Length: 507
Image (cartoon, rainbow, N blue to C red; front, top):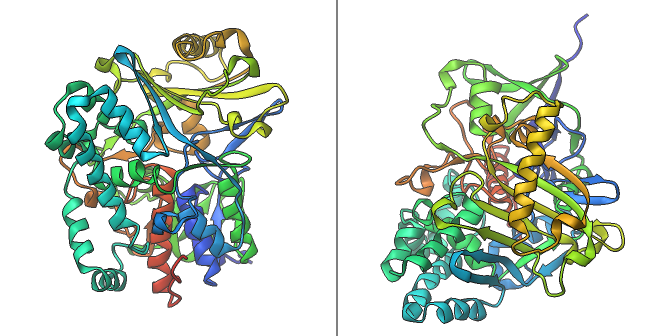
């Protein structure tokens, strides 16, 4: 007798933040949801792991969306989602988003205090004072529009009609801004090459593209919200965010199944029917949400070649080489900021390994390390092709990783002298590591828009396969934890309406 196939309302592939957000909000509406996760823990690149008493952020460490004040509007998504789910994530305010260390002795801290930040730019570029004011005002205008609008799917006609009816002028203004580039907007007001380089690194620090290739709308979210909702670090590390989403999901009756890798999306007559796991079992659902990249979804999990995605449709973001260190606390001086970006030469900032990202979250949360110790996380862009010549676990692979790590540590000592001598624990990760653990094509940070494409050309939540939906960084609005959170909210909003149980407004 054949075993009974399990059926539910919604299946979510992967427990990245976009998929988890959609799952928790759908379950809260009474729509039965099951999440299948390959690993033994949730969160994808927004997760944490432990080694010898140290807790490290696997990826993301700069977080928006936790503001409490009403001026942060609907961009307070984490605060509003956790309030809706009835779970709490304690956070610690970080006064500086990123401290930039740039060529020619140009150092600037992008701090919560907007006037102080703009004042530091004007002090360096007094001849661009008016241009600085006008450009960052453009970002504020985008932010001010977005914060007044309820989160929802751009494919949901009812949502769009409601937003358009309540705020017709703002909706029209935002529509115009979606076609604009951050970099081209900056060049309307600013002419100094060094300052334009800074605008580029402001974009590259989170979008991995220069400002000309970065949509103005995306910039308005990230570079304006730091002065309103601010940067807030979750106590206990980045893994606190997926842990809270899982708690909310399970509290409402949802299920997350770990060590359950999805190997195929079952499609019949152009409609998603469920998934097949690595153990061969099939699970059916009325709707399936993929949190995988667009390439993994349609070029691997969906086996029908008619749905394959052209490799050239989008740019593929690089992956990372990451360095996780446990260090003697004495190496971190008093007053040292948590997050840093280092650029040695503007010619190479957007090349592989050209920009160093650095964080020391134990400055905010000492519980992440043993007493008298700090956590240090440093990483640079990398490609899987740089590492495929090595056999996993081989001596050659280990030596290659250590050589890259030594060079990265040496460069980082520009801002943290003595780092190499303070290291007590070292964990290294290459693009091969990201590919293995995150199940992402080449360990990539996801698809990027090509120059000239506008943000509306990002994939949305619906797909060419009926009842197959998408969330995560392959979908609008793109990369970053707050962006994929938005994608999860909009995906849940669209599906919930289809089930006749529309999402209530997040307040």
